[in-house]
Image 1 (spheres, rainbow, N blue to C red):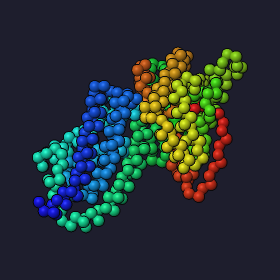
Image 2 (image 1 turned 30 degrees about the vertical axis):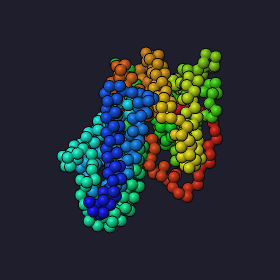
Image 3 (image 1 turned 120 degrees about the vertical axis):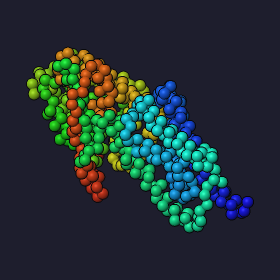
Length: 431
């Protein structure tokens, strides 16, 4: 064997190793995902799901490196590798076209199945082309002017490696938000939109209104004005009667920084309505015929586990940040302070457990009111709708409300704009 051939094989050994590692790690991760989805359906807090996540993370890192190698090393077989790489990019973009939820691992089965099939396709194509399932250095074609090709391809590969993850994240954010909220939160043509769904059962009607912690002030005013005085509002808002939290989460700074308003003002309108949940010892004000009836049907901080309370305080610090840099530092602190299992357990309690409490209140008051509103965070809505449909309700109609305009936010975030004053810390419900 000539020195040139030996050198060529040595130079290609590392790219071939990374390419094969991507195929094998992705195959293992997706095969495990398919088997788990079909047979075990392990919760996100399980050791098996944590292992799957680690394999998927390694697959992602290898895939990003492979994208650059496909540009730098034209020898690598495209039919073998591109199917898996393209599916990986589709996953990074939020897997548009597939309905899935982070809170329900079983919904990820189609994504794992598609990724598994893409790797199998690549391995079969390599077998048909070269006689082996994995890539061999000896089978790769010879290209002339390899040094010149590499010099030209290097800056292109670096640029692609920089642009691809950013583009995928930008694409993934709206897709994932819409996926995780069941379409109750979406990016419209002119702004962020929330969905209102009417469900009926006989002469009873329930309206699910997706909410966001911050939005245009007019959205909250219009929503409150649209609620008939004969309706019952089962309101969101975690209480802290015993003062358990060291600091009450506040969204004021985040809202002001984007030229918007916090949901707290809407909550205040509800607190000043015809309350049905006031303790017997408190003065019961006369019914105002112009305002709806309200029950705060949420949990109290003392009802939540210590781990979830700690998570609420940590996340609250992100929204209380006075600058974007401070918010990013707070976010990194949260990701480093909590394991994925702890985060998922807290999210499950903050969504599903609180939904159960709200629906228990709906069951209590359903016979007294023919119209009930549930204006809760958009992430609560898929489970609310699922549980209501299990109670016999059927969807009658659905509409969208614009909660924030893009131009308002962009104007507030424009460079050179004077930063808004920090919000005064006022105890408020931790939604």
